Image (tube, rainbow, N blue to C red; front, top):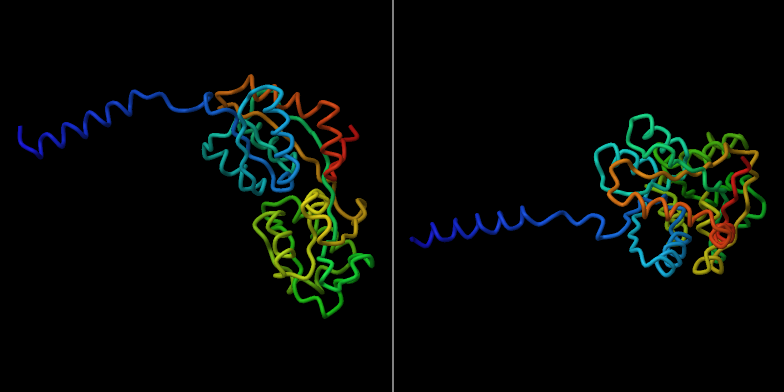
Length: 260
């Protein structure tokens, strides 16, 4: 057999062997798509879950709207933790969510945040944003980030949005908005409370809690995808989220329990 023919046969055999290998799904553990405001809280939840159950969990963080689009296009997640309950509900209406698995697990809060070194007195609240010395204000993109929509609502409530609109810097998600402030790309940001009370961050900045009456509730929801190959483990994880220890942990990171 000539060398070229042998090479082609070898390639064919290799492809045949690969086609017989089952895709890595359940054996790889749970794959979670989580809203960016869970960047600090979720790793602790996962750590405790893995220690108690022996299950493996992998988490990807991003904006809720982008994850919803990815899931509609077949992204292979098992669980979706959204910063806006409406996204799991929309996916459910499209037949992509395991029936009965949607859970309103927490409510988020927004704060005005700055580094201690900035010299900005955020204790004055959103009115400080009218100061011309503040050149950049970071928020998450309201087109696909619930915290961005809450930020815009709060600014409009204070009749500030039109005055500061040209100084707003849009981030891909709420975590990136906080990064803009942390790196000095913006003097202040309207970000998630959960991102500024984390142990690794809280000593670097100061924040002002924006009254909840100034923006729509940030109702956060989770759900199991119908396409999940790990439904039993996914159900176990969502039950774990409701345990007293994890509820206390989420509260420590600035999340509130749903009132309903």
